[in-house]
Length: 163
Length: 268
Image 1 (cartoon, rainbow over the protein chains, first blue to last red):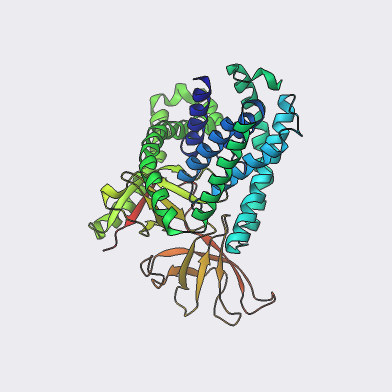
Image 2 (image 1 turned 90 degrees about the vertical axis):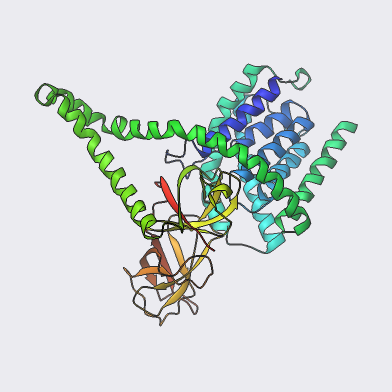
């Protein structure tokens, strides 16, 4: 139930980002709200919960974006698979490491999207646009992840075996 | 371990599905489009509810936070001007809104059955793409590929329409292209979005007649935008770069971050 509440809160944040905060000049630094949920789900809960977060956020981001069908779902699930691969190799012990991993994940997501555009359609026109936004978005997402981590810990949903 | 493998297989399944969606395979597009259509209806309602306090917040920011110094000064002058000063503060904002709405009304009155007025309820959550969400959808008569404009110029085109809401791809999206010509001249080209504020005018030959300050209008040859709508103004022309074509930067007439209302042009 708590996990569902967390997920619902995440979706609320996503919708707020689209409507409630649209009057703020945050175009360059619009955080990727889905990333902390996917990372926390994969590293601190179970892979299944990470998958749910990746699919749900990917799907809702597509609803709230004019990106091509499947693009954001692909990047989110691609990020999840990268996290599953790294789960036994990377240890997140504090909110600062969590924040760093989230920031790096934003960059990985951008690279996955560019690779998808290039390999499936041969498109390179997004390259400059995606690169311009990647680093500011990574920094802001990393910063927001610090608070998100506190929020997740507050809900005490972490599986103790991982600690 | 078995559960972990199952998750990986499911994730790969979703990855494959999204890849097929991305590559526009019709079988997948139909089912996915329908799911999105129904879910977007629910999301649209939430956006509309969330947007309501934004208007009050906008008013608050414009009339209080940004004018905190003015407010302090006003406090000093309060004894002298009393309530009149507070009333006067509201007038410019109301006048601005009045002017904007009058512009929209004028356009609607000119073509009453061809334009649908709509309010903006949201924007793209990813900054890789540029779209806005408006509060009118299929029930108001909006269909895909209908042009969206303001009295200042074009905004974009409807790309996804659900019952009550529409997703509009703005002309500065990297996937957007508009056929235009230079007003008063024979020069034609394609205005493409860059993902940033400034647009690029492509396929203009170096010996074509174009200079800084020229206004661009739609040519009507892309079968989406009617002929003669304002697009933007040329702010830079570089004819010295390598290749056949000149490098032309265009500033759109609309500030897409500051839009409140738009008009959708109905097509028969």
